[in-house]
Length: 102
Length: 479
Image (cartoon, rainbow over all chains, first blue to last red):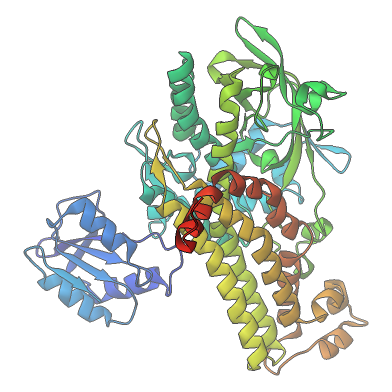
């Protein structure tokens, strides 16, 4: 896995998702082939967190801000509107506690 | 430990309950067509907890062990936990279109956790520690519990001890050195035939002289002396056909309710959490009721989403979805559904910490939520009937559609818009039918307490005197 960025994937609970979060993440994963090693929050260290929220309420974004403070680079998506390649670019480039939201 | 649906079904098969259905004893509920839909619904609470995309709602961290546990065995540790409970219920309702049964036991656990703490504080008993030990095991095993509150009650105008038959209220018939012996019954117990244990609670506020009725205890459902008699539901034979006419063939209509009878059932002391402390029965009942009424905007909100979707599809399949009055009715249904959901979220957001550390929803708002359920779900169902049309109630049988002789006639005359099969049209109409009538509706009226019980809470918690003071002040009334 040398050279790959370790990114933790975290979904919101999905109480009333406006899109298929798992399908969207698979598209992101496919766009990140060779670039990202996907892990979970239970498997630190990682260089960034991708939060896949089901809607604009973005509950998990709020939770993680509270739980994890500013120590992680977080890219949070709230819809499947952003091109998966753009999400990967943001994951690859975020640093120093940056936040990115789509 | 039960993790998967397979684990759950195996555990049900192994426990061999004494269950009766339609006059006959059932040897294995897991292969009986009357019970499979209910088992499928409850199994979703296990299956979805294993999916990463839902674990944030379906799992929680135990405050006792620090381990990840199924949320249905969790004690709420924050307002966020209360809100997540409601979100989880809506999510599960989207998957099942039905009742998934585990919230009743969940609510019994939380009500007892906060109340046993206070009983011990006042009476010097050791129920809380006992309860924590029990809870630890439930969390580790991931057992499904029935929340056993409602007694048959016989003549409602009489106290428990005044009944012609004392068993009409569940009671302690004997106290022994090693435990108590229980007799009586709990009526319309959701999920009872496919649960592992029942947590009995007092059915109402008890007073002096009612000590033997002031009992809370956890009892394995396969304990000697327990009989479960399954309740008949509207059109339940259709579930046994497993086809179109069932409407929602894979899942239950409601929870699958049973009468649970206790005939001299022994319960060891380590499973007894209230025994004669009548002064805490009122608060225990109120807490259980509040926690349970909190749920309904979540689960019924989610069920309503399915009804709305099915009504829209029925309309689309017959070419009326573009009509302005249909669109307006669908909007009204959404408004009613979101109103009940808002109530559940609001009572959770306004929740507070109890002495035990467990969090508790705002009781007035929780009662308001359930009271709206007794109205809004009926109105949503009425609108569904309006939008779907009378055909929902007069459709031929599925066997007619499949018949070599008349199938073509059904196909021809039950058709709707071009491009939609008659079969699909029949499926969606049957789904509307099964979710909006009979047992499904009555559950919205009486589940978690009849409307009058919520109005009593308004009387108690509605602060009418304060409202009168506000009015006097503005009117500048001087007395």
